[in-house]
Amino acid sequence: MVLTILTTFWLCIAACILALGIRTKKGRMMSKTLWRSTKVRIALVLPPVVIAIIAIVFFFQPKVQPEQIEPGIIFRDYSRTLVEGLAKQGAITIDPACELDEPRPELAYMLPALVGVYRDIVKKPTTARLVQLDDTLRLSFDGYKQFKNRTINIIKGAKKKLGPRYTFDMESQGETHTLVVTYKGEAWRNEQLCALPATEAGIRESTDAALLMSITRHISDFDFNYEGSKRERGLLALDTGEGLEQMFIGARRLRMALDTAQNTEDAVAAFYPIHDMQTMHSEWRKSPLKSSWVREVLKDVQYYRANGMK
Image 1 (cartoon, helix red, strand yellow):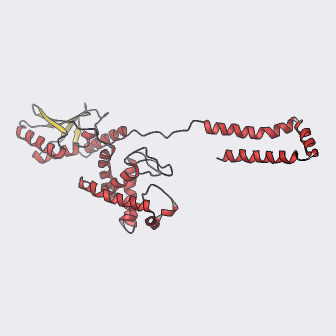
Image 2 (cartoon, helix red, strand yellow; image 1 turned 180 degrees about the horizontal axis):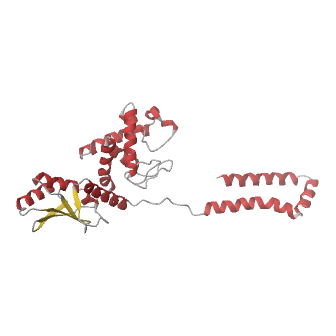
Image 3 (cartoon, one colour; image 1 turned 45 degrees about the vertical axis):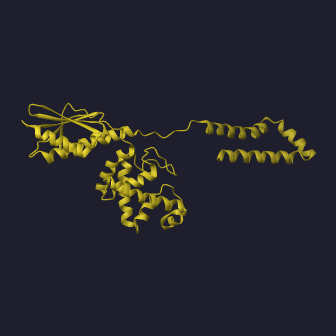
């Protein structure tokens, strides 16, 4: 834009000088005399040529595209962190042969629920041992000579917790009894995969996870590569944080907004992804688009709460 203005400005000046110069006989003679000078010709021709070259280089240079985030990698990393966190808490142990390079989130996310079912059914439970976690989850319960009735109850409880898209089997050998779980449903979408991180962020920041999920849905529709009105990128189009990190930053900002705003509507309005002076602060109610956006966010909160988010 600046180069175009400069080029136009220079051409206008040159045109004016030329027009004034050829209007009189004396001016025409002077123009011919000056044009015979090599230095004058260079002085007249060089600036627009240089500007034109710079403009060509500027417009035809390859544009650097922001690096695209791969959601699959993000959720595998989160799954690995989840499992390692359970091990640090003493909820499970991880078998030395268990590789966590490609943990399937649809199975990793269910691991706390499976451990919970096992502890609810077995009196004085030993620590569950994770044997495998990729496309199949194998969780071993060691130290029991008999496991028949507990097998039935654990599988029944796991089916109730996880639903019909999961299949279960129990393999027993000596005092080792391994629950084998596979997932037969469709791969989870980003929205489903973001639910657990949003819940964790809500607990950590003492804020409303269902509201955080609804805000995320209406900002980016759970697209990690979403770009906002001022080129902010990510799930919440924030000016900082990448990947799921924005979920935790967003939870912190949401708690602060809820603590300081007069009401929930004002707190939600602070997350509106289109920034302009006209709709800042309390003025947002005068904007039909922003008012409608806030209403839709609050409406969808009920959907997430109905699906178990608090």
